[in-house]
Structures are given as structure tokens and as C-alpha cells.
Length: 124
Image: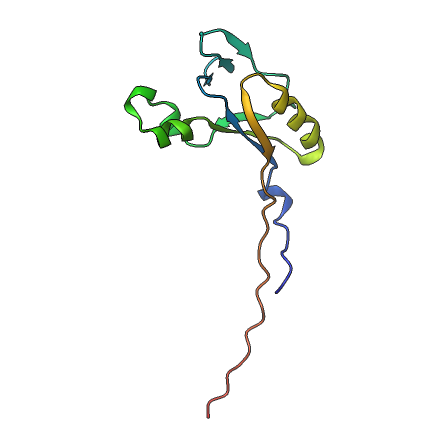
């Protein structure tokens, strides 16, 4: 087995994946979390150029009543894209402490495989 090679720095950003608690929503336009009673909770202060995004944007914009149970579950998955990996662990703690968040973890590190040099096959 060959070790993996990290991708070029300009191609990757580190992200934090998280799942909202049942009944919670995120309003992209306002940048706020909304609890089951409709009370808004502001997004915490994140590093400059960070983005909070839905993992499945098409489902996030769909009314929950029209979705299956599995689709409603997928609606709850989100991520914070960070501009650099420097503050990842501190931002992870902030995300985990939010009342709207059921679970949060660092996204897996991505890497590129090493290509083994091709060996010439001899014809017999």
C-alpha cells in the first residue's frame, strides 16, 4: 500500500461537519439558527471568510412536510467551511457548544493516492 499525498494547499479548506437537533432550522438569508418554537439564535462569531452551508441545499429549501423521514434527516446536515485550518479545533468547540447542534466533528482529511509507476509487461 502506498501512503497518500496531501492535495495542494490552494485546493483544500478544512471543514466542520455538524447535524442540527430535531426541529431546529438554519435561515441562510439571515444567518441564524431557529429553534422549534421559532426563536432565532445568531450564528457565533467565526473566522473571517468562513461559510455555514447545508450539505444538501436542495433538501434544505424544501418544506419538511413534503419529505420522507430520510430526507428530513438529511436536511439537518450542515458544514462550516473555514478559510484555513489554523483555528479548526477552537471553531469545532464553538460549533459543538451551540444549542442547535446535535453533533459536530472535523471532516476527514482528503488526500490523493500515489500512482504506482506502471511496469512493462513482457509478452511471451
